[in-house]
Amino acid sequence: MTSLATPLGRYRLMAWVVGTMLIAVFVAIPFQSVEKVIGPLHGVLYIAYLATVVQMLLVYRLGFWYFVGMVVAGWCPFVSFVVERLVTRRLGGSPAGYTRGPTFESDLEP
Image 1 (cartoon, rainbow, N blue to C red):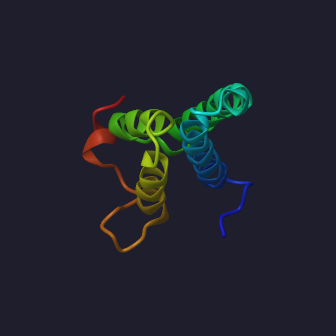
Image 2: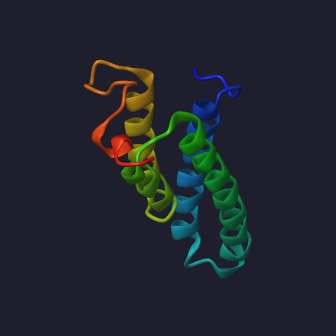
Image 3: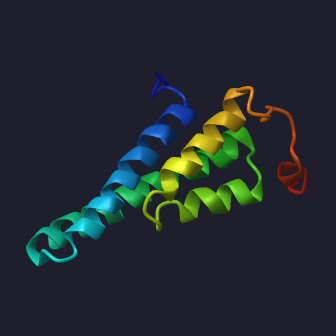
């Protein structure tokens, strides 16, 4: 389990929370009274998620496309789970081919 003391741990938690809440928003659309509560709650959580995304960008110097993917992940159901997995593999150094070293995307940024 990832520690919440690291930016990656906080990002992983927020990605799962925001992804789950986004699915709940889509499920609650037919129920107006439930949607009035869940919609704004997801909006507040998405702002907190964006704060963790910016922190990840600054601390780990992720490339532009990783940043775009993480931002869009809060808009599309189920995408946050996929992007979270990709970012975790990239930063975790798993045998899936991701490295901690510079990549083409991060080489383009100053």
